[in-house]
Picture 1 (cartoon, rainbow, N blue to C red):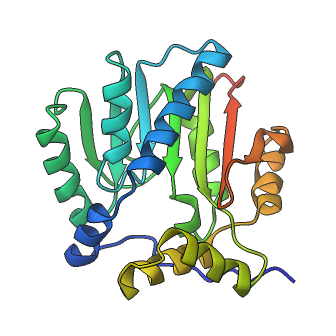
Picture 2: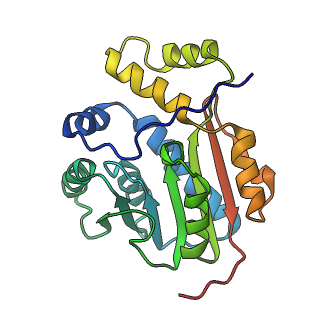
Length: 226
């Protein structure tokens, strides 16, 4: 039997926790996300100028994207004031304040259309994950990219423990707990596929892309009025 889903708080408001999260080494994961996003857009023939990143955290992915593609501008949305404060510092330090806009709020705070709607490790925080996908369809342009990635919930505590030992083997207990809690809050591959199928997309547009991640990559063919 697959582990039951246990939700985390949707918003990380503690400045100390936000600082710890920012200090953790997510560089490989962030760079892989950025590279894979750009590759998906290129494969679909989508020119990326305007991107919205929901749940941007401390804006490390927008920074990685802008460094890889000088054309891109990112609206980086984050509900946590603690995260936004660090995000603004990170963007300024990277010299990208003119291309990355940090926006306070949730799904209703930015209007489209965007060339791509993306998120990384946001969905597992949501009690109703389909909310993110439904809103993405409202703000993406026709023929735009939907690109969302998150953790896969393990099938057992043994698998969860193995993943924690693999990726944070000698880290402080608080970092190990953060990963364990996030894995426990995540969706299964089948759950994500069920959500996107309900929105009219092929279930196979969601793929397992690492031993701990799923990725939904799809092109919107829906014309929306703004």
